[in-house]
Length: 169
Length: 336
Image 1: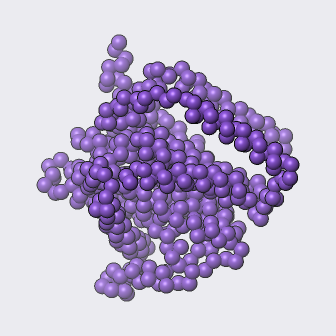
Image 2: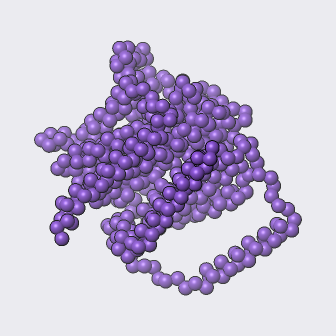
């Protein structure tokens, strides 16, 4: 068994396990931590694919995001707040059916897809941060700039909404 | 070290990795032991005291005795604490602190992993510690530790932004995020000269990231008893303490590499080996930490955030702008 296979096995187990526990835990802080496990394991999977820039960006973005999410979880809920058991009976069966159908569709689609052969392996001495930079600023420059404008609009919008509430007090 | 990573996995090279990591851990532990000793000595001298001088010759074994005492303490846990998270938090805080050391090149040959994105790796991983700190604050079920945890999260997340921005200037000048290439690009002149503005911002932001004076609000003992680790004792408290000093080790190494030319000697003194230069520059930063701690008062909590966003961030952005313009002029972009 090669090292990368063992690592893949452990990381995918952690990814799926984190997601499952995220749903089954009843306290909000526990949920956030298991979500964090999922995000960090996905970063590990990116490293196995030799996409270390994407992996590090994943950690950089989501470790901050998880911390913020946790702060909101702490500030907006009671300390001992526990979610009640959830719905019972008919709802459960309907929910299970929907999920089963969704799984069937996904599985069918994945099985049917003919995957393109592996892309020609780029020369390993060019760091992939450089390659991503080249692509983003030549081929994808307009979508990239549009996304940044969108984020700026969201940021300004959030500030204006927060300001309005502040003025009313 | 680097070519070991390319081989197929076998018992032999897994053992080698483990051994190398243990050696690094021992070096770091040795550093932490004597960093604490020198911190107490230096602060003592600055305050016209003697500092620790009882245990061993010159008090050299004082920290060893303190650690032994710490580890033999009873491991207490509040009754209403969240058991699992209370145990997980010290691990979450410490593991990334040790993990960031993997990319640090101590000399041109002593390095664990030669990543193309070393700078980003360091910054990304150090962000995970915040999560450990909030978890500790929440799981202790104590209002002081929660306040300490929240303060720490707000502070570390907002100071991470100017920290990253101040490094961008260095990355622009080098054209690479690889720490080894960054050092090699400083052959002619160390980055501290062309990137002085970036260096100042980095120094201040690093201080806040390390939770050290004058930004030690998460551990303000006069306001918060102790901060996020109020309820911790014994080995678990030692983990938090260790994480803090290991970050100091990491940050010292990072400053040395990014701005002070890493293992490169002062011109004319190249007969002294690189590792000695690295240790000298690194010790200078560590001394600077103790010097600040002995002389600076703590910032007020309400000034902290506005300083990061309204003071440091614009300066860091200005630095990026200046660097980018200068590089464009040098490359002849304005002479079309």
